[in-house]
Image 1 (spheres, rainbow, N blue to C red):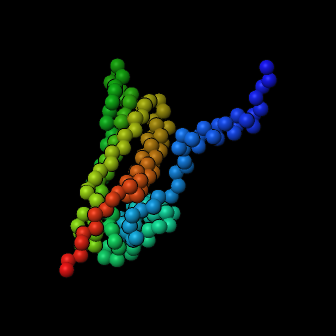
Image 2 (cartoon, helix red, strand yellow):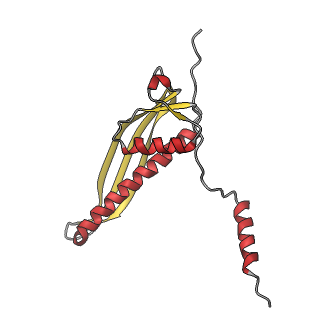
Image 3 (cartoon, rainbow, N blue to C red):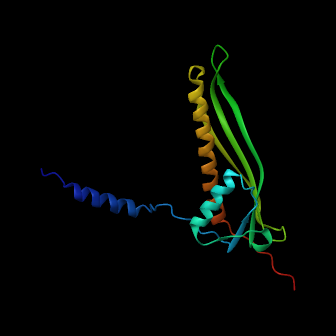
Length: 170
C-alpha cells in the first residue's frame, strides 16, 4: 500500500479547517464613530483599550466626552485572593485570583447606550511556601494576563453591542 504524500495531508487539513468556520481573530469594528475613554492616564486598562481601539481603525478616540458619540465609563474594580485549600499543617496550597470589573457606555448627555455590565475573571494558582518568590512572580503574571483578557473581552462586548441612540428632541 502506498503512503499518502504530505502535501495531500496538508491540503486536506486546510480544507477541513476552512470548512469548520475557523477564522483568525482580526481587529474589532466598534459601532461608534467616536468614543471617549474616561480613564486616568496611568490606567493600564485605559492604555490597552486605547491601543486596541486605534488598531481597529474604524472608531476615533475623542479627547472629551462632549466630543464623542459614546463614553466608556469604568465602574468599581475588585481584585480578590481567595484561599481554596489548606494543607494538613495549615499552610495555603491553592489560591483563587478573582477580578471583577464594572463598566457602562453612555452618550454625551449621560444616558446609557448599553446597559451597565460587569466582567468577572478567575484564575487558580497552586501555592508552595518553598518557592515564595516564584509564586509571587506567577501571581503577578496571572494578574497581567487577566488585565489583557479583560481588554479583549471589553473590545468583544463593545463590538457586539447594539447601542440604542436616543432620539434628538424636536
